[in-house]
Amino acid sequence: MIAILTSGATLGVHVPGVLLARRLRESGVDAGIHVLESLLPAAKLATMAELKWAFHRDYRFALAARKLGRDTATDLDEAVVLALHRRWRDGGVRHLVAFSGHWLPVLHGYRDFLGEPVAVDLCRGDAAPMQSFVRTGAPPYQGAREVNLADLALETLPWTIPVTRTPPVPWPERGRRILVHGGGWGLGTYRQRAAELAEHGFPLDVVAYEPDDVDSQAVRHFMIDPSWHPWHDGGFPPFGEVRAGVSPAFSRGDAYPDVFDLARDAVAIVAKPGAGTLLDSLWAATPLVTLEPWSDSEGSNARLWERLGYGIGFDRWRETGFSTEVLADLHRNLRGAWGTVPDYPAALADSRVIA
Image (cartoon, rainbow, N blue to C red; front, side):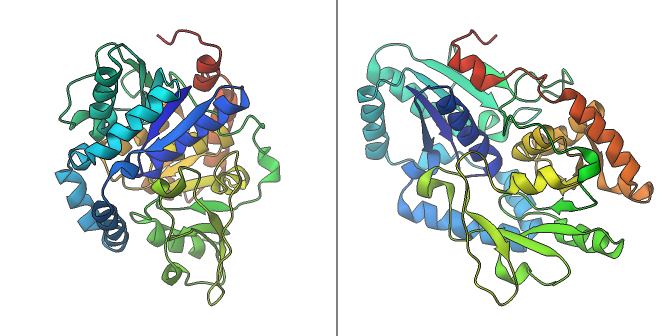
């Protein structure tokens, strides 16, 4: 039994973990998902939900709050953590994969609870150290293996988690649609950039964050169910198309997030360069046009994607006159890399040693 440890702090931390669990189960490996925030008191969860709305409506506030940061692990309910340790022991969990450094105290506690070593992989989706691993108050986990899905220092993708193993949509079949979003929390300048692209005649798929964001009949809008949070069920976000004045119907597949289908048909993803968006770009072979990053790690992601020839900054793309030929070149680079990056879930399923 492998326990996959995610966090609802960002979908870029949560969704890769859920993808890993899905790919492992497809290989016959028993894998369970645990979301860090499910160990928090209800009052803390309510505060987090309120912050998400505040961050969406005021990006400057989101940037300021990001710089302050805090270790979520200090708020965990000790009784709930102990119950989790018991479930892991009784379920035979001896291998854990953590996508957030805030899990480190829980990992230390589980080793002490068992009185014996357990295998731990620390999985980093970003191209540089993530805040949760850097700012945690817990000591490093001795013997843990670092599994990096992107690495700016080495300018490479050491490992990946397949979103799907279905080949990308051929470029001539894609038309000119562009997918625009602000990540799982609807952050940043994506709405302004969507308006600019609409003025240049691009058909758009825009992921709105709340019903009031749906302000145009000329643009297709989609939305994650605003009432859903990762700690509710540990799955992919419920997703659906929304129209002004019409109650949305949300649904979700089990294999991968529904937004990926939009990414597969697009000629570009215009978004902040979060870890989940990198996976979408790679596995859809869809170029990433990067917007202003929320964090230092997102800035590293943007630089890596540009150096690998998989993405371009929005301002640089504007200077080309929003050239689709530039996007076609980036797509060819991504298509050439498709399926060549080492497959992390396959390695886990085959019990190979990950160096």
